[in-house]
Image (cartoon, rainbow, N blue to C red):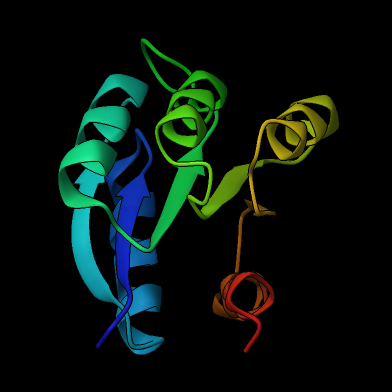
Length: 121
């Protein structure tokens, strides 16, 4: 069975690029969200195998959404995707349960490496 991914980013072009990459990696697209509240609700509804989470979004931040997802499911697998210069945010996200992080602008290779680490492939 294919692994399912939920993509969370407030920028549509980034969501589209991630969709392409995950499709190439053999993932099934579970859903997408453009803000933290939607991300948490969709995670609870869809129960994806993996989430990509932007940090800076309108409304609830990716960090807060990550915390709520981990509270709901301590085994949730979340890749934080954020811009360079956000080291303190990355550390906070990892402390709050993120499995891995990737810095924007990202490449398919960086996403693939993060996925392999998470799923021990």
